[in-house]
Image (cartoon, rainbow, N blue to C red):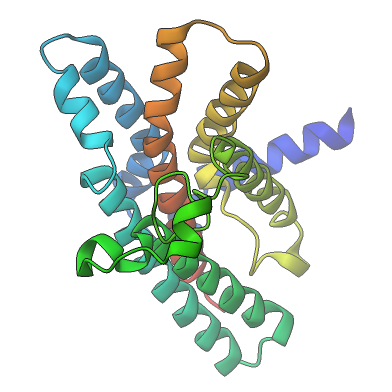
Length: 241
């Protein structure tokens, strides 16, 4: 019990001191903490009100603002992660630390390209026949292959749990350079809760309209994942190495 209380106190202290730790104004700290809840409420209003539902659904469609914004933020996260790796190497950081940021950045680049179907809709090239046969959407992507389609909530859950573990790891000074800032806990919590409900709904359907809402808002959760993935190296890069 005492150990659990100590972890909670460390998290609370980390969040409270985050403005000083990450050298950001208090207003930015508040924005990072509150923005995920504000966005969720705004989209709930858009989708619940008949007069705005079409706008909310349009925003969540493929190749529309939310998905394109997700890809842009992932590209930015990749760049920031690579810069972080270079800075750590320059100050004599170990290969494990800067190598982690390189792998993380390359992962973000891969996911960003998947979001854009590897530029297929931007440049208009045809899907190879071998991919078209096994891809549920006829795209040049891996995440739409038949055995992945409809199970993306487990990928989202894995990211959320991994980020949560990163927050815990960051409490130890030895791993502070790769730890996830506790300031991102609201984003992580929403990702995990949404993915958990989505997974539960796969096995025990709750209600058809609810299931549709969860599926549609999964695009918004992907934006949350991209934002968390960008803020992670960005905030850590503001700590004095």
